[in-house]
Image (tube, rainbow, N blue to C red; front, side):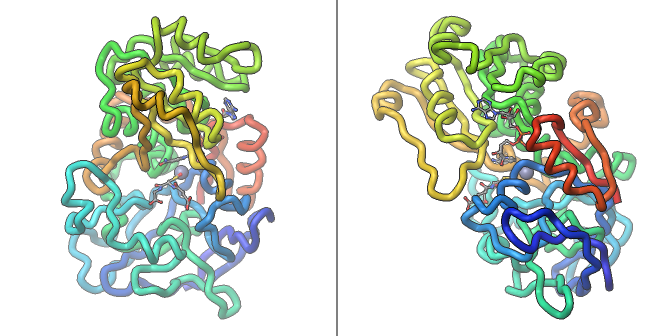
Length: 368
Ligand code: NAD
Ligand code: AHE
Ligand code: ZN
């Protein structure tokens, strides 16, 4: 079939809207009509050329929601008409990782996914006869896309696509990092570095689990209003604060119980660790840093009890947890609507990247 898609031909260049060909689903695969997709900072990161796994030409996008149009041979858990959210972290429920209680990082198709290919090592997309790569196993910047069955969460049919697409990455990453990975206890003091599409979800996750202080750190003060609405109790602008760590220590009576880095900057990752409380504070890295970047700190920071860890897709096991997070939204436990600041058609997708880079948007959603 043919489908309209935004193609990334080269790093650093705007996306180009093309009509590409898409082969049907092979055994174990599913054809999905994408109804809506968010634009995440990670799409911009890969497009910038900073992603060591970034390969071109590719169809980016990993934060979508849509409807099953066709299922390949052997697909049992999904049928035509089901509503789904694509999962860049699949859940096969069989690999060593899925069977291990401490991780959500299913590895059953990770190597081909990282190369922009389907599990059989080929691409379903072509333009002028030449293959176009998939991205994060999802390629939601295409009106139609093919995914493995294990990379689709079946969701309830009354959930609006233009909102729950954000659960495909940002919402789950932020709320899940708090609830599933850090397991923040009620009464904890939490510091959130970066008040964008991820950080604001960390804030609402922290409020949901009953955190005490929720301190936001951002160089863009225009984020304060929404952050307060989502549960931020205190704000620090590092540009106006001579000693950021000291300011956090003062506000938290000795340091954060938990800090979350939601920027992707190795300097703020260090600050996020070092603002944690001696003896028990945990810092969770969510932000993605570019090729060649490395983190550092004095080992004494860890010797004296601080914990440095990371979180991918909020620790969520997609097929199991994503439908639950959709319920949280439908039951009013989490707010997605107010984080979607912009909506546009696929033709205007490059505006979504501009709005992100200028700091004007939290989430832009493309509706097909
Ligand atoms: P965003 O652009 O919406 O937000 C980033 C925020 O950081 C902005 O508010 C910006 O003003 C602020 N900021 C930038 N530099 C700063 C600095 N030096 N000090 C303080 N604040 C600063 O991005 P996002 O969509 O929220 O994504 C955040 C990061 O999370 C990105 O690196 C993204 O790739 C990553 N991410 C990781 C996962 C995961 O599973 N680990 C999932 C999604 C996104
Ligand atoms: N490809 C990059 C790393 C990118 C990365 O860390 N991705 C996150 C999700 S970001 C979603 O917006 C992730 O889940 N990582 C785990 C994984 O297996 O990719 C690199 O550095 O090579
Ligand atoms: Zn993302």
